[in-house]
Image (cartoon, rainbow, N blue to C red; front, side, top):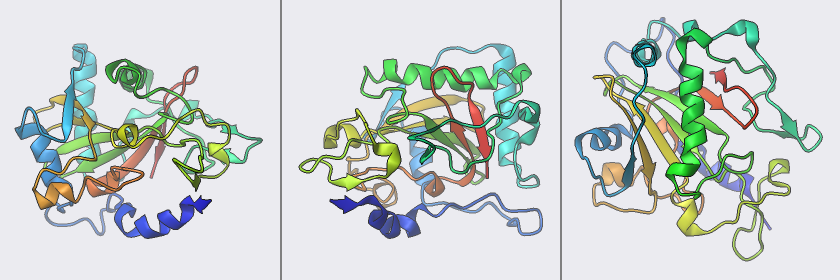
Length: 265
């Protein structure tokens, strides 16, 4: 049995999270990130070798306007978080499992839903709910598979996005996946295969022209561009690190039967 936590130590330099700077230490010009070329390629190339475009449904004028405002607020380095879109009065504790020993959230604090009037909670819930259909069942909504995403802001490209991580807790298997991921892995029904794991990341983005898009990333591809290939790879976990794409602003959590909750950094 090999402990997953040894891999966390090896990955710590890559996965360190650059948080939004405070007004006192914000940069005078936008900071560049390792994933800048990765993001630009998604928008400048309609068929990048490492990603499959997933069509998005047309949204209402209210939702489109609020997505644009949300992008601007998330990118604004004069504020720490887009808190004006959240409803603190309805915060709730995200569920724990295995007698409280499995905490899916990054902390034990309450998560906060979006204000209902923004319609953004419903928008992002719909993304979570439709990903299993878009991926032909390759990804499922569950506490072992897809239940969270990471909101990031990239000022140099003007892009705000969410990295959805699926296959979070594959079942431990001596032959195929000999890694102990802790209490949240107990009773997992996710079977590890490399073909599935390399496509465990989905990225939603909204660009400077307020165009939203959704991409299913194949982390096992090499395209010959060192700046993009450095973002890809990472076997056997194939994790696309949100901190490589921009400042990490918040985590989104969602499971069937619950409202989408936001946990700010």
